[in-house]
Amino acid sequence: MKLKKENLIGQGNTAEIYRIEDQRIVKLFRTSLNEAAIIQEYNNNLHIQKILRCVPRAFEMISVNDRKGIVYQEVHGTSMLKLMLTHLFTMNEYSKDLARTHANIHRPVPPDIKSVKELLSSQISHNNILSAEDTEFIQRYLQTLPDGNSLCHMDFHPGNLMLKEEDVYILDWMTAGYGDECADVARTSLIMRYGNVEHLPGFVRLLISLVQRHIHKIYLKEYLSITGHTKQEIEQWELPIAAARLCEWISQKEKNKLVELIEARCAGLS
Ligand SMILES: Nc1ncnc2c1ncn2[C@@H]1O[C@H](COP(=O)(O)OP(=O)(O)O)[C@@H](O)[C@H]1O
Ligand SMILES: [Mg+2]
Image (cartoon, protein in one colour):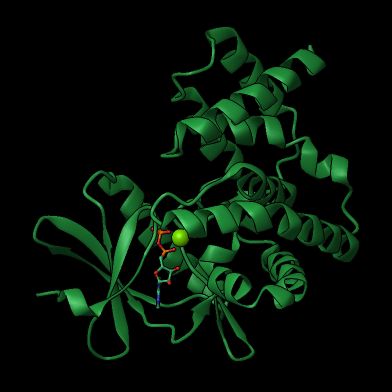
C-alpha cells in the first residue's frame, strides 16, 4: 500500500493517520512503539466495537514500509479538543458532554480484555524512576483498591473523541481494560491536570494548558453528579495511576510533577 502525504489527516503521540479508499483510514504507528501494544489496540477494538456503537470499526492489521498499521472505518468528524479550542464559548457544554460520554461507556463488560489492575501493576513494575521501596508500597496499595468490572478506556480525553453532528466516536483503545470506573476517571483527571500534547505547535500547547484545568473542573463535577461517585473514590486511584504513567512517553516536566504527587501520597499513607 502506498500512502501519500496529502492524505495525512491526523496525528497523535503514537501514530499518523492516512485516509485510504472506501471510507477507511490507516493508523500508521511510529516505529518506536512495540508491536505487542499495536496488537493490543487491534484486539481491544475488535472486542469493544461489539459492545459500543460509538467505536470506529477496525478491519485489519497491515505493514507499510516496515511500519505497522491498523485499518479503521473513517469518522467524518472533528476532535472534541479542536472544537473546544476553536469555540471557547462552548467549552463548558463540551466538558459536560465529555463527562456524560465517559459515564455512558462505564458499563459491565466480560473479561475479554485485560484487567485495569493487571495493566497498572505491570506498568508500575517497569518504572525506573521510583525507589524499589516506593514501587513495592504502591503495588501493595493497588491490591487494596476495588476490582470492578466496568469498561475503562484509560486514555479518555477530548483529543480521543470525535464529534459528527449529534454522534460521538471514541478512538484509541490501546490501553483499555475492565475494572473500577473510578480508575478511568482518575486517569482522565491526571491527564487534564498535568498532561501536555507533544506534537502540537507551541501556541496550541499553551492554549491547551490554560484551558484544561477549567475543562477538568466542569468534567469532574458533572461526572460525580451523574454517577453519585465521590471525589475520594476517584482520588484513591491517583497514586497507582500516576506511578503507571511514569513509563509512558511524557515530558520530563510532567514526570517531575507526577513524582511530587506520588511522594506526597506515599508519605500521607505510610
Ligand atoms: N477512524 C478515524 N477517522 C478519522 N480520523 C481519525 C480516526 N482515527 C484517528 N483520527 C484522527 O487522528 C488523530 C489521532 O488519532 P489517535 O487514534 O488518537 O492516535 P494516537 O493513538 O497517536 O493518539 C485523531 O485525533 C483524529 O483527528
Ligand atoms: Mg489519541
